[in-house]
View 1 (tube, rainbow, N blue to C red):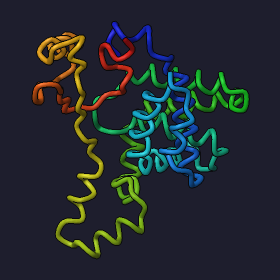
View 2: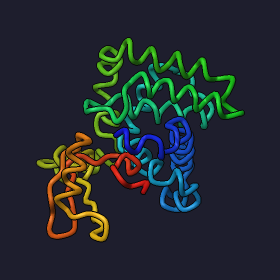
View 3: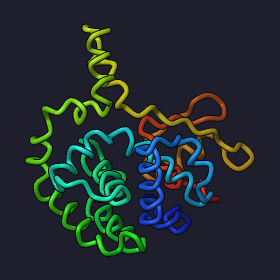
Length: 228
């Protein structure tokens, strides 16, 4: 996270706690949109970004959790583990360093009265994943749900209805859309904001007279100036 925004954002463990609750709610049949409306505004932007990511990779995360803990944990613990694994597992740049994610996931468990006794279990599972990452990913590579992160029935229906294009459709669905930011022209010009993003190491380009296009989305609290 850029240094200029790090002091304003809630700690990562709080965001992971909230994200895990959202993931658990979706697994239990509740709408993510409806759940987000009741999230503390200070946590909402970060939790939304992290929950979108976690749900996009939930098939892989669940398959890995089964490798690490064949006996399903309680729903809240399962959601926290799967949230952390969804951030650690994909073959793409991590939003946070791997050991920071593990540390903060363990902290999220410690700070939750219902999960406190399971903090060592969370630590053990996630550190084992870091040690055995390649072997664990290899073990789930033939699972279509882990590969495509969609329900099996949907994968089979696409394959049946679109035999030439089903894999391309699923691959496209796994890619996050680019992020477009509207610049507050009362406080910045588009070129000034692009320079600020560049200083923070964030790739961006101007899009029209009042917007900036980011090819790689990032959690909203990590956007320079957002907290201001």
